[in-house]
Image (cartoon, rainbow, N blue to C red; front, top):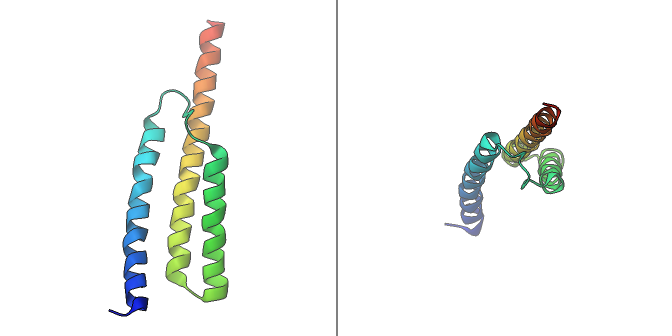
Length: 102
């Protein structure tokens, strides 16, 4: 196996592992009942930006559609965490306000 083949194999394996690794985080946020307080918007937004810029660079400068697609999927997972967190925090604040009014 050449170094190029080995690096492609490693990249492919870890791409799959990375995609699967987002699922427990998405699941935990979706099930959270306390406003997803442990989630940092700035961290997830930074990761989203990194993935979007990597995907754009891969598509535009490298003509690497596999890397661009993988980066797009990573960004989508990050945006899912951000959106779920925003929803959970909104619901949590709304339920706390309702409890104080009652």
